Each structure stands twice: as C-alpha cells, then as structure tokens.
Amino acid sequence: MSEIKIHFQQGLTDLLKEIKSSNDEVEEKSFQLITDKISELFNMKNIHFLFGSGTSAGAIPTMIQLFNKVEDKITKLSEEQKSIKDEFNSINKRVKDKNLEDILGILYSHRVYLSDDTDESKLKEFKECEELINIIETVIFENINVDFNDSSIKKNIENYQRFYRKTALRNKDLSRINVFTTNNDLFNETALDSLNIH
Figure 1 (tube, rainbow, N blue to C red):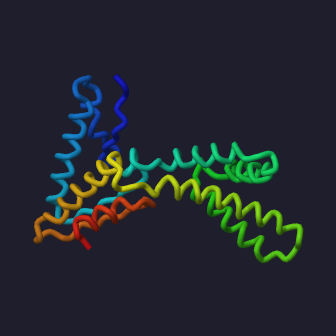
Figure 2 (cartoon, rainbow, N blue to C red):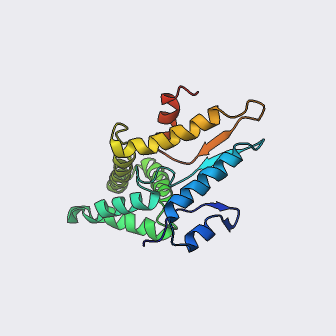
Figure 3 (cartoon, rainbow, N blue to C red):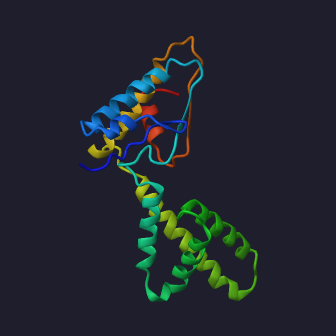
C-alpha cells in the first residue's frame, strides 16, 4: 500500500495520525475525518480559511512541479542560449527551495536595473533577462490556465463549489467566513461565479 499523501493538522497535531497507522481504508477514513472536522469548524463564531499551494493539486501543478517544468524547458535550450541557462542556474543557486516567485522577483529587478542602462553592452544582457522571464511566465501560464470543462478538472471545481455552498448556508447569526488564497489559479473565482456568490 502506498503511503497516504493527505495532511491534516491542527497546530502541530497530526489529526490523521491514528488513521494513517491503521492499514484499513486509510484514504476513505481520512477524507471522512477531514469532512467532519471542517463541518464542525463551520459552527465556530469566527472562522478564516487560507487556501495555499496544493489546494488545486491534481488539476494544476504545485510550485515545485512548475519549477521542474521550467527547469526542464531551460535545460533543453540551444547552445546559443547558454547564457540564459547560466543566468537561471546562477539565480537558482541564490534562492531557497527552488522558488519561482523569488527567481522572477530577482529577474524583474534585474530587468529594471538594465533598462535604465544606456550602455550598448548591457542591451544583450537585458534581452536575455527578458527572454528568461518570458520562458518562465509562459510555462506558468500554460500550466495554470486549464480547461474548466475537462472532466479531470471538474472534480476540483466541484470540491470548491461544495465548500462555498457550505459557507453560503452557514447560520446567518454567525460572522462571515473569510477566505484567503495564495493560489494563482482561477478555481475559487470559477466556483463562486458558477454559484452566483459575490
């Protein structure tokens, strides 16, 4: 049996610890416990949800998967584009955890710095910086812009819709639920639009 990849914690406590230690219907029992716990949380007066990286996993790549796709594309560049490969590798060594956001942040700053330079020799470096940014942004764009009519994507949308239906049906005497997201996908917006929730 493969190890379960579902994580559900409250503070430092792994709420799935007992279920994971049993070898009996681990995934099904995990989902049931998570569903029950979230339903219980909906009765709290003040509640906030943070959807982070991985909430839409399965439908779109996680940040590390996006990084791997970018790295793969860059390693396949031609020998004439060696300086672009070198720049990517140099910046990647300086950032932590293969973080595309940090890499792009450095590249954006570098591009601004180079754009103010009138030296002709810096023009080539500016163009290479622009090209590297374009490669990274294109890979991200192609991977997070999905067809919401695709059957494999619909399951994720249905999960979001189920969550938002539950928030809409929350007791009106309780304060509103706040949802924060770090995701750069459109799953929240698509689910909310389909349910006519503003």
